[in-house]
Length: 306
Image (cartoon, rainbow, N blue to C red; front, side, top):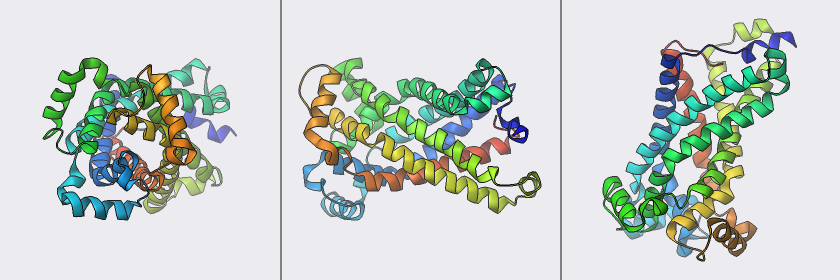
């Protein structure tokens, strides 16, 4: 067991390290989310457009292109790229920060191994909470642009129009559902990824680990990322559906909790998981791509994960 303790030692990160984590997280998230914009457009439309409610990813894509042209698949690219630039940086740097602090709080390596699940869950949740403060207004803008064709011409005009129509309250109308979506997403993303790596490496001898080829490491990271992405999609899908509905203006008037409860009852179990197939494809690619890019960027800057 002693051989497995090293990864949980408390690292001594500097401000430069955290700036590197922020840059790596920002780049990996904005690149992957930006590339997935067409899939996200189709997924969102399946959730909010009754005409596409029962469509598959392929059928939904064909319908949107036929009715609105190929450019419709890039709707919301601006807020997606900028939103996940700031959210990704804050999330990945925050995860490193909180994981380091929680490892220190439990009192060293032995306890860190013992309570590693709680450390992963706590670090992912707290990091995501603060990252979502930055993401929410931009995500609200993206969903409005995607769900209402012609609402605005892009990020700046859409953000300005949404802010002028409802102010801060409108921009943060989806904050609670975003937390309900993104925190389970982050838990699935980080915790499942950590455990997949743990399972893969636990079966190896120290000699095998040291002599592991770059291709084998890539395979482990890719497989772990895909598995984590699927878990993240399933855990966060109900809240993702509700978020799309809230930002489209659906549901009764009242408190956010009341609106979410009413929309959930209206949708039912099946409705809450509408669009899960396209979203699993999207998140598997997103999460795997993010971890691969994140590791590559950090390695290139000669920094190492805790």
